[in-house]
Length: 190
Image (tube, rainbow, N blue to C red; front, side, top):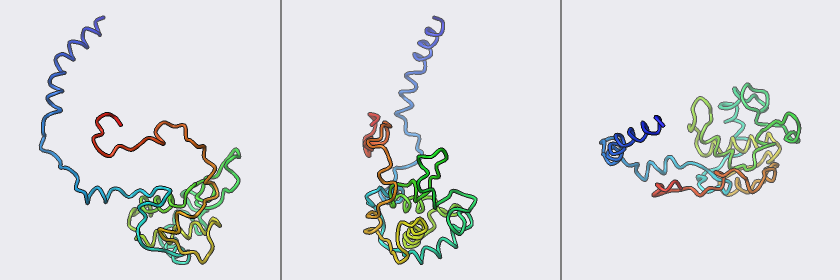
């Protein structure tokens, strides 16, 4: 009972001040410009929407990989100190699944997206679109998904069918997976 009375008393004292505080302009920050928003909107969905112009081949990707990726992922994509990129086929249903690009990832565009965002680890977002297409092609080649003479671009990358594309449960029962993204006037919690 004491806690309830104390809470009501506290709300009656703090409540009006909190409402006023929400309406105050603190003079900090500014609205993001359209150019800034475009710069932050770098995700690439399974459809490939948003992939940039450019292209890269498996052979070009081998050079990028050796210069930027080999120290963490090893020469073969499975012997470095960081996550394995290659192998693991047929292990997902086992007691010790090996999740790699080739065994687990459902979309090739996700590989482009991830490399663009986060790689190389020591300097994320430093690779050009051509370099990202190339290293994506090389990693897919290491997994036996594309041939050695393959060149990838915004048209060809989304068409690649990954070995585990159909290995995920659909519809995904998690409540946030298929939620509609709110892009404006999001005060209703949408």
